[in-house]
Amino acid sequence: MSNIIVRCEKLIARSIDVVQTQFVDFAHHERTRVHRDLEVKDARPVANGFRFTGRRRVFGMLQADEIEVLRHPDGNSTLCSLSGTNAGLKITQTFESRGPETTLVRIEVNMPVTGFLKLLSPLVRVGIQRDMEIGLEEDRVDLEERKYVKPEAAH
Image: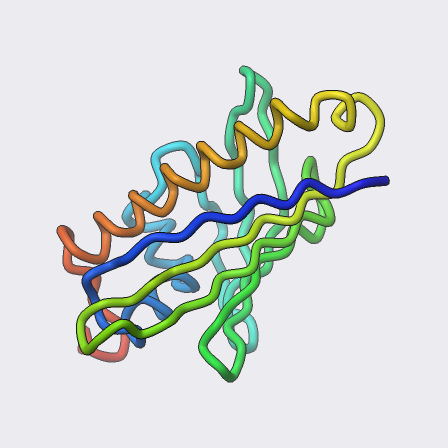
């Protein structure tokens, strides 16, 4: 088995605590459909995060995964596919404050590939890079333009 590793980053004009919270708030992602191509279903809280079912179409084929997202004590977070089409996939999200209202978000996708997918690694890598860039822009829009509100601040 080998792994495809892809990295991407984006500046978001919101404070680090708000950005870190939004990136693990999958109840919000499910309610508001933050990501157009990712259907989030059955988001339920777990210690330090959420577990949810994620569905999307890739080349017309439905991919479904049971995903756990955890926020770590340092504010960074990981998403891991526990089972499904992309079992073993790990997404690491790190955050760096660049001022009171600016956060640099770095994402790393680590996807195990075997068999036929191994042969298609260059295409898979390009697809993951494109999806990451789109996803980060959708998060930026949610945070900056839609003005995401942290759950504890909403009440």
